[in-house]
Length: 504
Image 1 (cartoon, rainbow, N blue to C red):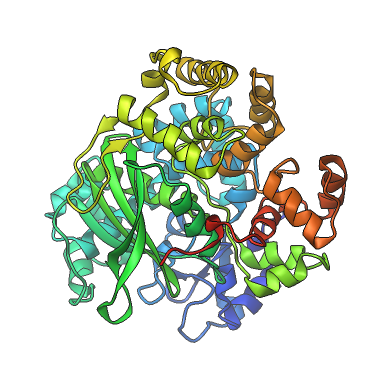
Image 2: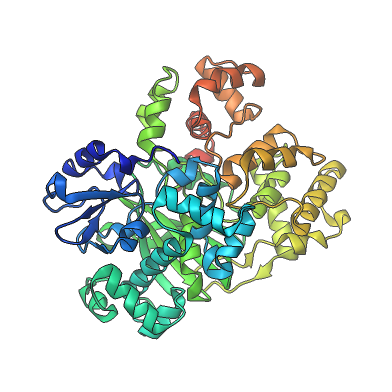
């Protein structure tokens, strides 16, 4: 078991007394005298130190009999950054639970994906998080239920099943136990000015740890957007004072259907509007959107480490909190990475758009220009390579990739083992270090992925006086570990390329 922060009582007490929001999601404070649990930044007067105990997860607090604070809503704090930068079984399990695997496949399905026995998975999660997979999934269902109760006018029975509960009775009992209110009481407390969209459409806020610089994050997504699947709309969501603001929009392929999401940076949160064909997909859609925008990162830890390098320090100070633009679908991104080999951003978008039009599933979008879901590996495995307007070698690379994805020989997802998957990618014909590394960086979520052969990185290195050859730059970048993926963002941002500019 790792040296978890919740075991360091003195440090936790200091964080609670200073109401330090940087530690929200790292640990939770349970108050013995009141029976509630809070996030470290809870605005109430801190309890006495002897009345505080600390837990590593909301599920552990709930399992110990504590209920969520009504002021700070600890169940809605950003997720622990531990699950972003770790690749061990516990971290992979947490990413799978957030993606809804326990609700869809049960604990045996979770264990099978990880390659462990059910008993081993339960023992590891209990040792590190104080709760097993069922309790962790239950806490996620409770959070989803609260969101639906407070932001929609759905009947409670519909909320129960959309949140993943097996029965209305279990739903009622869980809400009362976790929030110390009945579902109707929870809805009555919700701010009346909140808009309540129709069933299937939800407006919510995605929290993150400050600071966050959105320029490269949304700039990258907008500049590389595949027509029909993604777009930037200049007036898609309301901002401060009701003013319209731009938003990145895209289609989502989800376990029970499809969805469309609009995401926009706001002060202190990301505005998110989800339209879902099936509300049971809500927790998975939220998890994937958070992953897309890297919202569970710990920018203080990342930037603090990168600032120790005198070359990177001015770049970090100029725009702290850069995130890594990731993806909602690892297989989709792998296909797009191959299409982007040795071509411009515009050419890669054109190639991807042709695949989407020919093989993607059509969707209806009443708000904008989204027309398709990105095609699945199964759909692409049936394509005729001769129809691809690509060099012969790249056609072979693409068809080999989609066959490996469709057959399951190359599993890509939140549970992927980073080093093993990178090795498998490099074993495919036509896959060099750049393609494998960009997939590791954006699709697998490896925070230490590095792109020493990337043209933009080599140009930035030259301009900053860093070594520009891949081998020498890799050696120089060893000091940036384990956050080299974030160093890539700061290096890319030295260029005037559209990926670095927040669209207006």
